[in-house]
Length: 292
Image 1 (cartoon, rainbow, N blue to C red):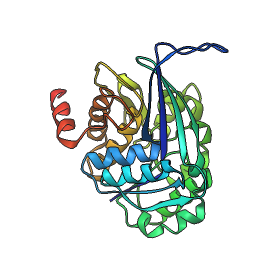
Image 2: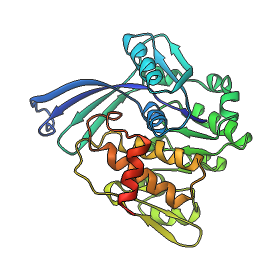
Image 3: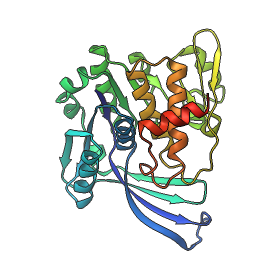
Image 4: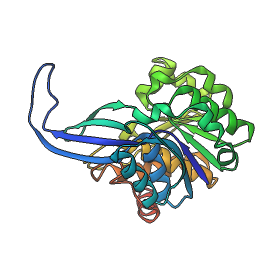
């Protein structure tokens, strides 16, 4: 069982030919609502790749809350530990151009997932094969999850996004960290490459289409990305993390796990929506075989 502890949002997606300048109004060419949130996205990605997945999170009592919980259930994710709280669900306002995105997140119910809620889920956390977290829920709740997982000997992947919530306190629980290049710079400074050596096999820096880097204890390793014609990059990082969780839970070696995650992420950007392009196991394995 992979347990994902994190955010559940409704993405409000607006498409436009170019981003507006300050004070400028431009016409859009798309509007839609799509289930998202980094936690929910990573849970869906792992479930589609064949893992048994449980979700710990919170949604509101608004119509979005019903829709978000139902979406997870339809994807095969266990929502027994998804809390319903008074008020609105979290939303993400996503502005898209042809190959880029800008996102504003309003946490809503996600910021009502408290450490005491995490404590009530200790059995689920402690019996998991692997825990996956992000930083779109209160930091004390992330810390409590890491504490419980560490005490039970359960490995954890921490996707430190948004990176301004990262604290060195997380490091004492020895999670696998998966920042992108910008997040790594925020966490460790512009010389983040040196941090790879300080955290062998526990710091994986994703580089978009260029792949990912880590240090295996003896040498720096770059796992090449898979170049494709991207339609929508929203959710690519979440697909990577969900796929990485599946691979590591299946005890794939680190380099193979990252290759698997790269293959899944490359498929995810070929379709619209954070969850819309997340692949299944069979197509991910086909993409992986084509790159060997």
